[in-house]
Image 1 (tube, rainbow, N blue to C red):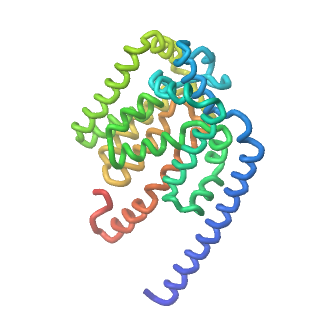
Image 2: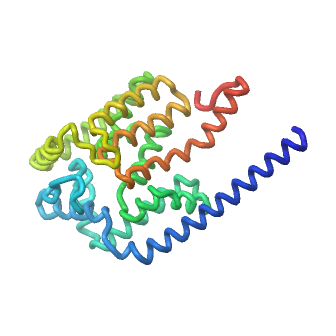
Image 3: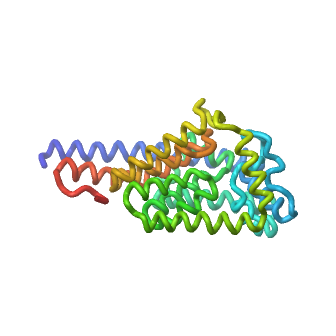
Length: 298
């Protein structure tokens, strides 16, 4: 390595550190503003508390569901509401809100590798800031998807009964020829879904009715793209990811899950922050390919 090349590398690292520090400073300001002006108001997470409380009271968690933008309407499959019911019973509204916020912080910290500057820099990203404003479930879903892709494929099944789109993990695994993992995912979906249905078949009927009412042309996002089109795109991307394999395939199926989310407002785009987990491996894969050696994850 020449002195000029080494100096250029040093300069780039210095610029990167300055930019990271600047982004972290912005993220810190965002968190302070949210803590002062927003976290004293109920967020989207209140919909989860209400859904759990409805299950506790023997009511339908879909009683507020008249459209995708109705405040505190519960839009997810019944198992999530049933799992949250004990928390809604034990925790009041605000303890639940702050517990939910705590899980968001932990998930983003895990995605950032528990590096404070990276964590704050990620908060500075607009979708992540908005997610912390409204306090939805996308950061938790990102962690679940990452763990399913990189460690425990059966978690695709758990994700599928929460937000539907992780079910494309079955396509990814099948395209990669990982049939045992496919079976595990299907067993998880059938087990959770079956137990949930046995506990409350009428609630499942209402859930299906809400899906049908929205219809195939429903976009439910900031992009005017029908949901059915996004689902088809997610399936195609998952298949390509499975055939591609390696770290690039992992990152692509993560994207596929995000594309297939039932609703894709600005909060939904915070899911894609999970891609930072693959940045080091993708960089190493690129270097390996440029040198003609074995790619990472191949």
